Length: 183
Image 1 (tube, helix red, strand yellow):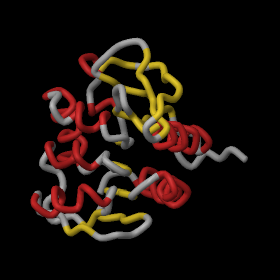
Image 2: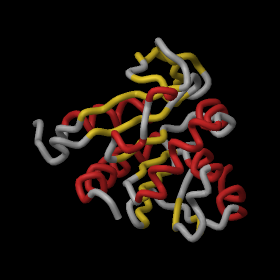
Image 3: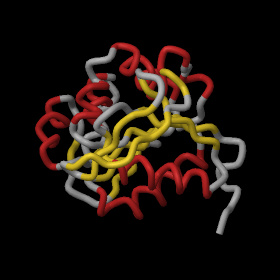
């Protein structure tokens, strides 16, 4: 049943080839169900390739190229996981600047699985209580985050989760934080 909790809110989903399909599609569906306008933003135009774990999944249409996207045009951002996706994004200066702008403005951010890698490069994790896919534990701790192994963690507008199994809790907290707005 649709609701309007996020009516008038515009959300960026930053992704590129190699995103974990469920970690992009389920948050997008939840956001749209809550009334948000959602745009998939990517360094490349056209379509990006999703994965279901190690196997190729569906492609997703890119709504806006990163070169034309401005953080001030969005209320919040989602960073899906998959190993290849955030690893590629954290090497993209425009992606890092885009994510950093959300963090500096206090806008809500939701990152799942390997998505926090991009937050590390954007210098947006120091002092934050977070979770992620277990292999990022040392990376997050080394960047100054307090890493915990929990289904979903919220710290000052930053929502993080570990894996696709956490998506129901992740999406619920993401909507709650996105509805609250800037922190």
